[in-house]
Amino acid sequence: MATVDLKRTYRDHYTAHTAPSLVTVPPRPHLMIDGAGDPNTAPAYTDAVTTLYPLAYALRAAVKEATGDAYTVMPLEGLWWSDDLSTFSVHAKDEWRWTMMISLPDAVDDLDAPALLDRVTRANDLPAGDRVRLERFGDGRAAQVLHVGPFSTEPATVAGLHAFIAEQGLALAGTHHEIYLTDPRRSAPERWRTIVRQPVAAP
Image (cartoon, rainbow, N blue to C red; front, top):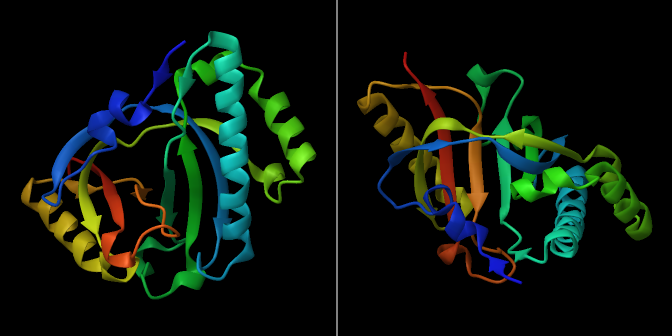
């Protein structure tokens, strides 16, 4: 039996630096839940996060039972947008739309995942289990940077990332993507580490 550290396996996609860089991220299985509203106040956001983790650990246990190998459960990730991207604002959080998700290994494709997710949802009365789905997702070609500090200071990091993209002769494409490497409940805000990723394309 082996324990696989997926953050090391996918190192280039779960490690970033404070200087922006370009990456290419292929599709992988993800647990996903869609929602809308301010993540600080919307019950739907809390429901999504508290539902994703039990399901992710259940899939991990099932993979271990099937293959003998365990893997580390990956960090929470989020896709963020608004219906009208031209008016998207970090200050209008009530208008945000989002997909919260956790990346999974390809081994979950060999499981009867829908039946497992339904069973675990019912057994634990998970609040957003009826909205969860298993879907392959990848950013493709993207620019990314590491943001260190509270979310309130992230706009400057995003602006720097967008400037880097323009300097590379590329345009924004796809959805703003964040990967939360730090558990906010266990660290001071100034120590939070978030990968900020933006898909790109030729203009």
